[in-house]
Length: 562
Image (cartoon, rainbow, N blue to C red):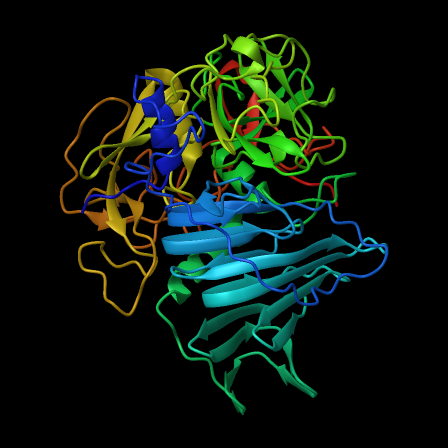
């Protein structure tokens, strides 16, 4: 089964660098012929705004993150152009609308709570407010479709779901599913509680209970029926549980994006200095060489990174160049919202400008310099173009991707772009091979979240088909580096390299007992030696979680101070 990687916008970006330019200067990213994460632009509709729960003293400058985007989906960013194509890491602000066609979307909130949209769903965001007390209030109007909500145990925050005339207050530490179709609303609570209000009646739905609203009829059942997209939601939750850190950056109050930082890279300790760096990069890679400028009315253009981990490092901290290693990110300082570029704590140096201060044909081809902190392409001047999405490519974009059926190639300087989230396991060992050879191959097969082979998935389980590691008969990995090897008698391996019935790690080793679920040291799958203590965000030493790398430096996961 062939898999279409859900990076359609970046296919357009890459093609633009070899002479295939989008159709119109007025909308430089308008060609959806090869884009697999877009839908056609439609004009917005207007309706009377209901009470969104706003209170006096609220601040409305919050942004949340489109943390995963697969297939066809679109976002109405209030630009006057209606629903437009969108991409992972696109900020979502109050008043916007998110819609999936044949696609899947995940929205991540500041405390790592998540909202997921199954195909053919729409969610509006009438309220994203910061209360005067410091609590965060989020109101989501579920217009249609199936959504899943998982809230963290954050006291004081407010999560309100609206479905027609029904309001659902979601408690902390709750996991639920909400289905809205043809005037019927079904709420299913897997964990936690939700308070449902319709008119003067209030019903509390507890763990493993469901509530059905059909006209004036209200039915509460002490069971939760399974639905086709549950496995996709479960797998996404497990990814965040495995790779996220529980506590937040000091001073920022935001922890969204930590799962992706832990999966796609690690901290490096060099001579007492700690910085985070994505896997699969060399000294020639630059964090601002490729991206998109997205217009937000009232705020101007905001920088959106294409990389799957590209949220926190582009909204906080700063990038610095470390000789012998390349660009690395150091956390710290406050959180930068839509104005995430012209901040002295994030970058210094000249910002190259295209002719007349505008990108040529929608693409900024200016030479990117590498001062102490990375220079960035000049943002388009507001009002000088009708484009709400403008590509910014200083060099051809590099992606990791399959080169043929059953074989995935990790490329140097891809920085994880194209690597499926969480499904290919321990990337640390792959990163070592890419560093030695420039690329590394992995045998793969396609499977839906329920574990079914992509060619034989049962209709009862639905979700985006994802690439999984394919292993040889005795835990052998198959291809290493640029070398092809036959993988016979395929036996599915655990993505963390744990043993479990002949499963093997990327390096062909077999772990004993419980394998470490992440890329850092531990008993299991990778069998990598424990290195120096992994750094915390404050620069202090953590536990022996790092793995030895060349040059005597150690790499380890993000460990947040308690």
